[in-house]
Image (tube, rainbow, N blue to C red; front, top):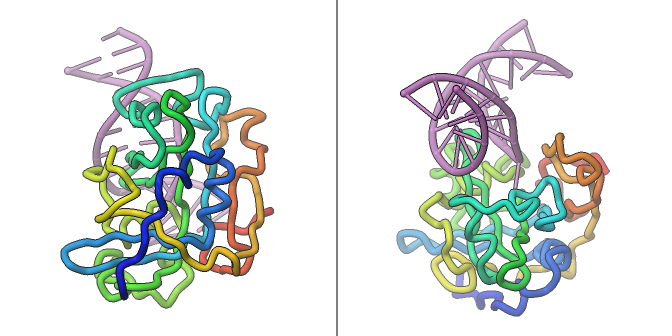
Length: 200
DNA sequence: AACCGGATTTCCT
DNA sequence: GGAAATCCGGTTT
């Protein structure tokens, strides 16, 4: 697979919702140990910062973990959930702590290496249809925290966004976020089965 | 230093 | 559909 052109900073400086929608169908690329891993993004969620109770930066909460959210767009926000690493990309202007969570991919390239990392065959729709599953398949870890996601080794690239059917639903797994848990800020490609759940 | 709970995954009934 | 697994940052003692 030839080198792909990375989405640049201007893409991530759109509103967080636009980034979340815009990433559906795009490629996530990781150049790892000489192998290029590519996944087509099928599911994202927008986390809208200080007013969003589901967001780690709600109420301007600022800790060692969330510090990167307050930096410039395009930075990598990884954090640990139970035993898993979850991948987010920071959006909006510096000081406006918003991000998009990448929740699912379909394997496109480097599939053999992805299977090795994931420890499962890629043939099932369960292969990378969850935020913890895709980081494992793509070899993304907490070591990537804070990295700029607009250049190798880890970046986004144009995919077949135009063939995606964008469907908005409620976000997953955020009970305790009150009214914010009802916002339709999860986006999936309605044409893909490789998503974590359908529930519109 | 102890305790708590989570933007999850997997296995079991 | 439910519960265990299992880890770390953040909060409380």
